Length: 372
Image (cartoon, rainbow, N blue to C red; front, side, top):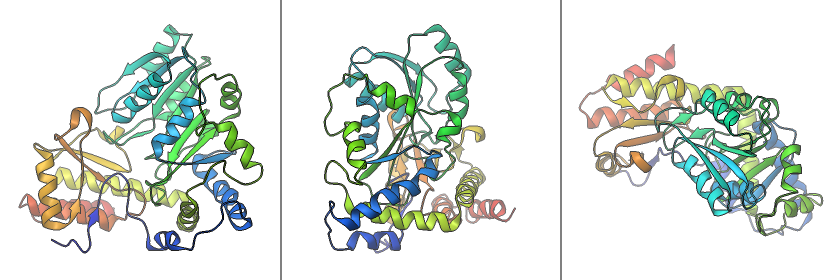
């Protein structure tokens, strides 16, 4: 039903505004030509405030995982002692990448329904002064947890470990203050809160991380950040970029700037609170506590969730995401990031209450949050 207008409510890729999508239909241009060389560095400079940095933002053509691999391949030499903070599917991805590059692994596990505990991190680092790199996820979209990156950064104390952060499903939906918080590497991607099609990742290295990477002996070619830095000096990329995504991002940034970044963050918090209030109103159990709740995705416990998701999609054209890892088929996830408004949350809640025959209960609870 309603397949002519599907409602995509997953934590990425997200719906793309028409103004942004139209940029993808422009005629192809020369990525070594003057027009692209004028726009490319300007767009990356406009992206820097979302990272909270004055450092150079680099774009990699690929998914968010490509950006993660840039971080690992430019930092992790064989035998490098690293600590991966794992509380979900994407924390595990950091661990898998570090293993692939021959790191000496330390893994600190956290429950898949709560945030990283900075005190545990601090204790572990005191016990392991040899650790050189620490990897974590800001917004663990597999569990709908927002980790307190600033507190984890502070938990290092005088420890010299560099902190590398996956902000793929966070950037543009919640604050990231790379420079102020002392983060060393931050990675993100286009298809989440940035409201742009998949196909581009973004990586920022601090001066300390850049200096550390000079000593990295890992084999790399396409992911070699030194190439991107060299070509950035002439406003180019070392390899053929996703040209139209640059112009799509340019348009998306104009929309974000027009709304105002603080207003964007407030909108995401409002959508989170509406979604959680509505789910509770119809008796559904939320996966994480309020203090750990992500502003960009909500996880809801539901038996045989995949069957429920298939029914909702077929009957109403609304698509929710399934669980990952240990939560597979035990939860569904509702994305409310990027090109989304409180009315989209009401739509998501309406199909829940209709399916559960609890008409008006979820939407009314969410409307009360919206009007508060």
